[in-house]
Amino acid sequence: MSNQLNNQCDFRILVIDDNSSIQDDFRKILTKVQSDSELDKLSLNLFSIKQPENNLALPHFEITTASQGQEGVALIKKSLEEKKPFSLAFVDIRMPPGWDGIETIKYIWELDQDIQIVICTAYSDYSWEETVEHLGKKDNLLILKKPFDHIAVRQLACALTTKWQLFRETKQYTSMLEKEVENTTETLEQTLGKLKFQATHDALTRLPNRLMLLENIRNIIKKSDESHTIFALIFLDLDRFKLVNDSLGHAVGDDLLKLTSDRLHNILRKDDILARLGGDEFVIVLADINNEEAVINKARTILKVFQEPFHIANRKVNVTSSMGISFYPKDGTSIDILMRNADSAMYHAKELGSNNFQFYEKEMNAHTLEKLEQEVQLREAIVNQEFFLVYQPQFDFLEDKIVAVEALLRWNHPTRGVLTPIDFLPLVEETGLIVPIGEWVLRTACLQNVAWQKQGYSPIRVTVNVTTQQFKQQNLVNLIKNVLEETGLESKYLELELTENVIISSTEIMDTITKLKKLGIFIAIDDFGTGYSSLGYLKKIPLDRLKIDSSFIEEIHNKGDDNVIIRAVIALAKSLNLEVLAEGVENKNQLDFLKEYKCGEIQGYFFSKPLTVDELTTFFKDPSQKKLVTNS
Image (cartoon, rainbow, N blue to C red; front, side, top):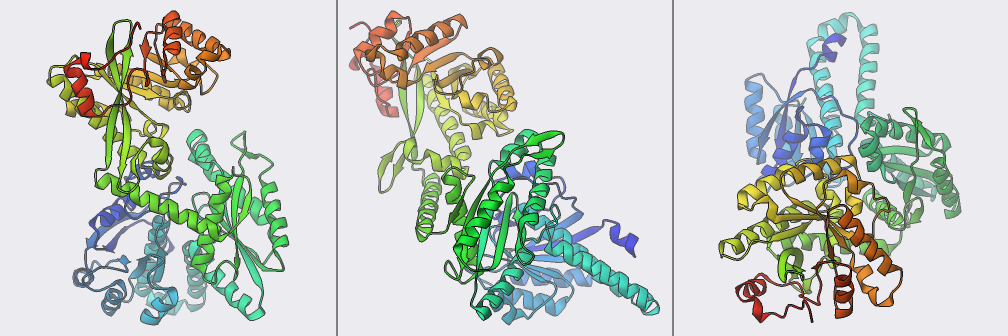
């Protein structure tokens, strides 16, 4: 029997959800061909993707989907008739207009008592107590709160299908169990103990997982109410853990998580709780405390845990942590509120520079809600097509002509008017929306350039800014190549602008730049002089142009160090056979200085503000209608 348990077999999993996109997400999460790195690239509708973790060896899952409860029950009935039962069902709690999840599960268990059920629910849906009241306490019923990451889904699928397999095999071997009662009972208890451990503990660190953590907190709340004591809940997150994974590999990241759990476990009391939620997130519950001062002392002790480097794979790895703390009952009388408030405090700690701890304050929720509202508005802006582009000309004043136009993003906000990127770009990057918005900017700018050429105007380049997040897309080269093919724009008329920090952030990005250059695309460094001081990368990657940052141009009239820097950048560019452009030119004094030192390409309000498509088209039709200052 134990040998059979170790053999992987096909498990049938039923997903009952009225959202087809969520059905697709389950298929992707539970399919072996999808690696963790591939899952991180998916734009999932249901899952909140965390940092990549250890790859979890998956059995082969056969995924079947249903959009309504009635349909799901019919599929289960058919599977039993065909003697191909489902082992596990993920059931959404809300499926209008038919049965909800609770009613669906009642009908399922009338047909099959053995099937494992996971209710997928949000904080606003049924509480655990309400669920038990409707369905009763069942060993094969679990609740998974939204949002959750793909590791949680994989762990549940593996543990619960294995548990289902055990129950079925137990039935098949009933006669054998009766003959060997004593030995088999001991084996069964051990196996069930292992299964229970797998279902309630994290596979990597062997710490309690979210399921067990919630059960433990319920017990602590009960004891605290009876004894009129308080307890603290600490959300802990490793700072810059993604950098460790990206630079040293997931194996080192996994070892770091295990060593972190060991260090934290060694400084906690016997009655305290340490759990891992997933990714690099840990939760600590300090039970039966007397005052906040005791929690402060413990938090300081936790910070000291990370002062010593971790020794992993013959190298030293330094990492710090950020913590958010909430108190029961002051900061919440329910688990959900306590955890949410501690989470808010943790993010506040990160905003203050990381490597510190913060207590929850009510103002944090208001800040969080404001950010959530802004994110909603951003997503609606994409749907409602509220973004548009303006184009700022770049002039070669020596030849008296436009050589390129820089595409600049604007947001026509329904209540705040036209916004520039400084008002919304940080949140766009934080939410990951920079990827779809960046692709839209690229495609729109290329289409517009082709349109101008088709109207008979002299071909020029259109320049588009690309961020670090966009460059980290593994498909960026193919994406840009496809956009050029779809729009019909020749590669020599596309220029990509990136900062020095983007270029040297990883060797992979430098390789990507080389591949893009081979396509014939123009490559420029934006805001040159404001990033890293090392200039070694200028020899390693194929560049075409340096753009002197406007902060240096502003100080030209002061005749200080900035003038020396500008002359040095111009000389450096010429020695490397690179074009050089000055940004932010706003007056004739600046222009005369740049003329003197042979900086021929200029961009700034002295020549032109960013123009709409219609305004720029008007200039193309009759350049004499627009004042172009070159020699005055």
